[in-house]
Length: 199
Image (cartoon, rainbow, N blue to C red; front, side):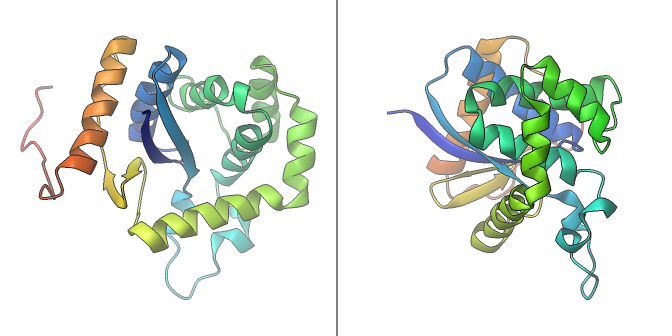
């Protein structure tokens, strides 16, 4: 029976990059996991009560365009999603790419063999934005999710911060499986945080 969990993401978060790199590297190496990747907009998290939701002014947010493009690929071309997902995180955090720029996203999509015209034609319909909003709001409503990366499994959710990219696929697999096991099999654990870092 595969390990089943969901995981939130926003390409702007460096800790989401690390966790998603673990997940994608392990999946590409053959990990028997059933993973649902859930877009979660950090821009909306920072909207103050009474302000216009970011969904109603998406051009004001630096992360929504990339989330929408990725959701199109996730839903319409899933075989290309994992490599694209990893590539977008690396472009943002290792190369300083501006993922709010459609031209930059088009180059990254094309580099992974994705039809960028088809992706942005779909984005223009508004459907991907609706999907991002619905999945973000469901995570926040149902499991009190407030950030990325958050693992969700067995009706529970936990924000997880890993500090290092995986050494290899085995390390990636071990780290993710430990996170999910702690979430699902140890309900008494509420918080576990080191008081200092060896760095």
